[in-house]
Image (cartoon, rainbow, N blue to C red; front, side, top):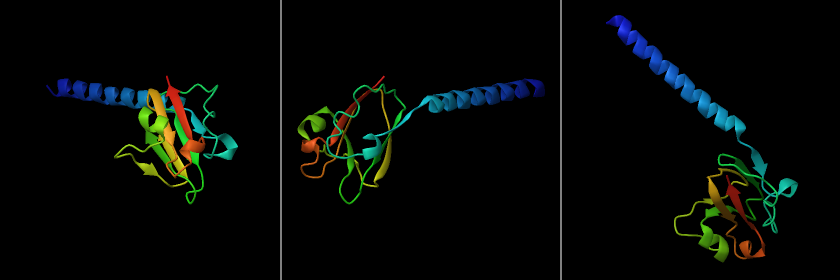
Length: 126
């Protein structure tokens, strides 16, 4: 009996080790992008994602002056209308990191007039 329990314990340990390896491999493949490149998150960044291939799990880093800007993850309506949906989290650190979900991801600056001036991006992650 003790031998049987030991085998089950080894199987559980092996399963946990494999799970950790899979998680590590997925994170190791994730890319990190600074939104806007060297200019950071600012006006006219709407075209910044063009030509880039994003994957679910990739990280976007938004670098900006927190006294002047912010970042809000929004839905398609919020993106198209430059509005902040109720309950949206407004990030204000000036160095925000956001992991992409599969599909469309939308981000705006909700300071009055900023989104309308092109401070918004739409990123599709495969």
